[in-house]
Image 1 (cartoon, rainbow, N blue to C red):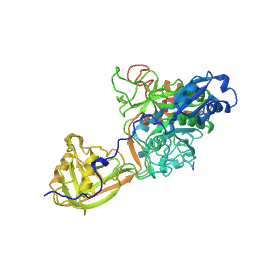
Image 2: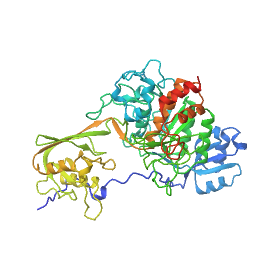
Image 3: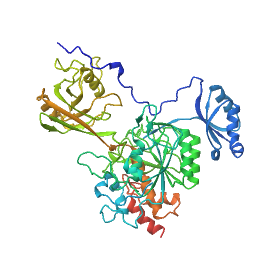
Image 4: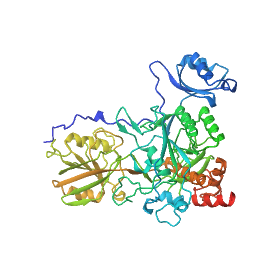
Length: 564
């Protein structure tokens, strides 16, 4: 007899939807309006700032933003209004406000631990600049970013994280239109994915200012490439990682107004925007150095490579690709003639939304098993009887002993559901929840993959879930009926991969150069970064590595000889 109960109201149809496409088009509003960027010719843009706005309003458009220096506005237009403006001879460009996507001040802390020096930090030579004797203390007279502002244009930040609080100077939220750029969605009360927190901490994380770490990791957390930098946070991406071109343009203008030297952008889109390009050109002419990620859609096949994403591909923007800790090119890192530098972008450790990541503890019949929590699994602890539930493909898979009073379900990775579709971890956990489980253990079906590194895919009302190795999974099956404890504890750090992670390494090194010599121009800083890079791949500049791996100590040494 199988278990007839359904311990939740969840159905297979209630499975979480896939996350929104990175480049999904803006849906048409009920009034037929969509967002556009309109740029006027110099004969109009040289007039009062209101002239461009008035032109759009006369056509019936709703102006949402304006940039006097560009002679441009953002507006919501109906198809008819768009047609009218398209015929206006004073309109230089009329383009969709395209979607962009992420590719994550108190007294400066001067002492911590050399254990905070991550693999990426050491690969770009940052500690050699500000801790030459490797004692975990910032050298008194060494450049560390002090006096320089870096503007991180991303998904906002977690203001609770101790790694960032001392560095924060100011922020602007262009998504919610306020001055609190939190990676947080007020309507749902949920924090975002932490992309902006991760990238900001790669630049400015503080020595000794630790959050909660995984067991066995450095208790002081991490430190950034340029811990003395003043952090400006411009939030342009929502909690799903999407943003608008109009907000990017407004953020660039704001960064400049706040006195930033470096604009760090770990985001982009596959196609250019003429209005956005003009905004970056204006920023470069004003003396700023925009540094942007090349994108994560590389294929490794020259015939299908998409080229460098935008804004990284614009003239004047320093495009950054990724390498792993062996200085090897990962296939995902987009390549092209615009690639200037590379930096660590694989498995990079940095700060994350407080408590968003977790580590797991599994104990069955007094034995401790190595495990790893699944991404998006909730924190919590449960102790109960261990039941084996096959591949977890139905709520009856755990047999007659399963009740709504609760138990720990063990399932094997892999298999198909009743309709012949792949049995995702999310489906397995949903079935187990319906069967009455309060926690889930997943045994890896690949003996060579250890405990694995898996995800439930997105947030939902999941159960605490952890994975174990193939060998330990076999052992757990033999402990059916024994007392099992599964505990997931929140941590404040995470390893992420992408050109997004590479970009802030370069932004931090640029800030070190500027803090050593504030009179340098953006062009001089760029030249120093490129000319001191460690050549990788084909001798000389190439489309995968650009001029090579950014090197902080080498750049500072070159500064002393080139600009004594």
